[in-house]
Length: 74
Image (cartoon, one colour):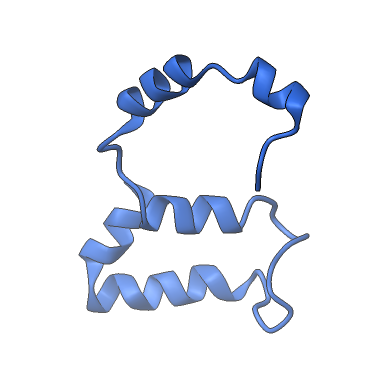
């Protein structure tokens, strides 16, 4: 969506690009999925996913594919 005239006047394209260059190549994926989606302990879980299920699922995954759990939490 286009910026409003006020936001457009405040936007610094050079600063935005320089910020991007400092973040380019940073890990993205598992980290963002886990910590961007679930940001509170109880309030924003999907209705079918109770909070107590996550530790159980991760303990099962850890036995089958420990590298996946390491990617999430390391």
